[in-house]
Length: 361
Image (cartoon, rainbow, N blue to C red; front, side, top):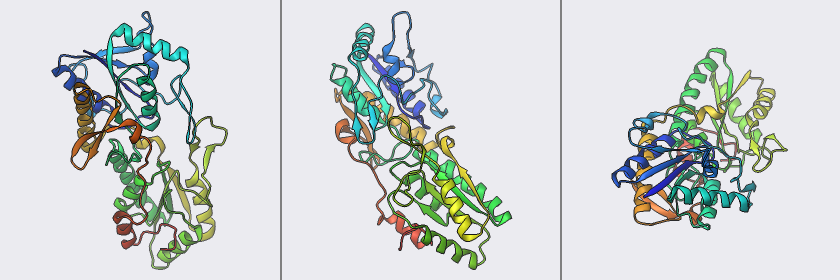
């Protein structure tokens, strides 16, 4: 049996672990694995321009410890069907025809798509032209309801927590306030967990509307008690005065978030008279080697994807539920986001520690 695998959308730690897990499990079945370069674009290969490589356990040995992806990935191009928030486009007929030609030429009988909700939606469109697909969820935001955890998330939390620890020492030395902007378009899991782990004073996330006056009051209260440094962690998707802060309002497709850290820092410094610095961690959270947890989870996801192909459970996505890897329909998986419940135990724990969320609680 010939199968394909590709990575689509943004990169994150653990992608190579998925590849190694899938290739290892496929090899035990005697299958050939084609790794397509640069996401779905690799499916547009021509006979004289092969955009893939045959993956073997030997060629993938120990890549689970590497960051990025050996196959490359894209979040634009011919297969980008998201044209705006909540809107879906379609793939051009000529692109689908070229894809089908590649699949038939290489005798590909199944395709593993490693990506987020947009990539999985694209995978479903490919299933309509007869290509059986299996999904593997990928997002450091941990915002897919269908799986308890996505690989890459824990690595991102580790990166942010270490950054907060480092920023705290310099902030304390100079009696400064540090505003740390982290990823999290719709969900504030990275800010919440790293904020708790790094002993942040303020955590601002998309799910909990905040007022700057409440944040300012909490900061002044801490300074009045003699605290030298102040740490504020904010998700890129947290809304200021019910509006998102954008990098570029003219961006095509989904808007590019970013900049809320700088906006909040300026306002807080002006109101508190505390010297303030901003650290936008950005793609640092997505780069570098995956932590041990993400290496294991990614490898398990890849291995289980082969099991789904073996059982012909196509149009399904692997997911972690409790301690077990299960399967869920892709169409269902991409419809519901995993958001922070403002009343969950984790938020309550942070409140018990004195963390300010900028609301009135």
